[in-house]
Image (cartoon, rainbow, N blue to C red; front, side, top):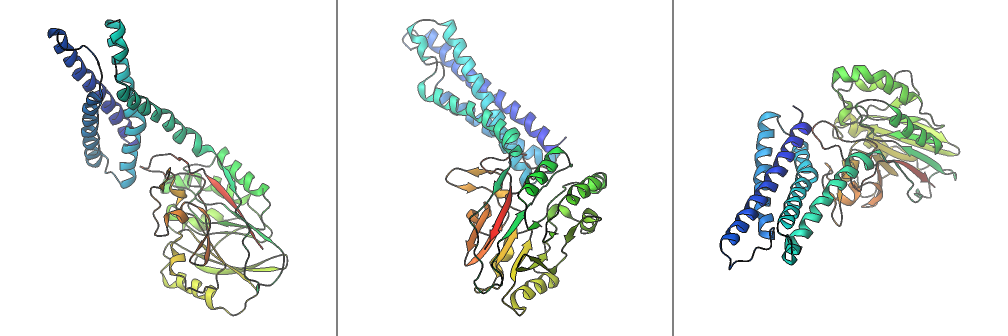
Length: 397
């Protein structure tokens, strides 16, 4: 059983248990009031009843987490899936059941007192709980299919860089899919329509096991083969692009160049670009050699760009750096951003507002982080909320 199926079943069960618990407590109170004429018959459902339901739901949630760990071998992403489905399925189901019980109570006992079949605070809580259901539909089925084209303000490189022309860089990161279909080709269409001078691909393309990769690699190769730009297309590997022998297979027969801890040079108009691409182990000797070359190689004319899947290398840069721009992915912008808080989980040490995506100045270092196109797969909840997928179009002046 997958973690998603288990979580859905557990959420439904918890919602039913919580709703039935509220109904049982309310019915017992009303039965007692009917026996004792001096006690009022209303309200049928109160905030105290909802508290009982919350306790039942909370206990069910803890049991579900423990069972998921025992039955499925849960990761932190699995725990997020359980939590998410409890919130958007279990809670609305419980609230709907509570409201139906209140309506039934009002129908059985008509009259002025029936208006108090549920107290106003309890009604407000139920209404808020019901709203979690459409929020879940949006986050699961709508926002992940959207696509923004992120065009941050032009980045002015140091005045001593040679040339005066602008350089447009297209960034497509974290396609992170389990197959290649119409959506992935539509994303490439959108990127090519921006007519970038250079295309940078910071990794995470196909999240599949070895058998799945073998099935889809030709389709992925066809997709990447559509990418072209005057200054070239350059790719580094991400977390799901492992083992490393997958990367040469992905770009075989295409114009995409896989940078395995190496530096390349290209030109766009009257501008010279030096691009260093490093892998996941950015502390390895070969990756450090790339960083060292970008920092200390003689000359001021060329624009130097670091392409790295993870944003973290920016934290180890010297205060005065020769690298003009770092381009990364990895964070997906957090996939879920809570109002007034920001992304919940970014899996990087860079500040949360930077990991949320976009072009930032971090301690004097320019870094662009794409929010990605796809989703974390496996046990993770397949959702985006307030973090739309995007491709980046950067302009260097």
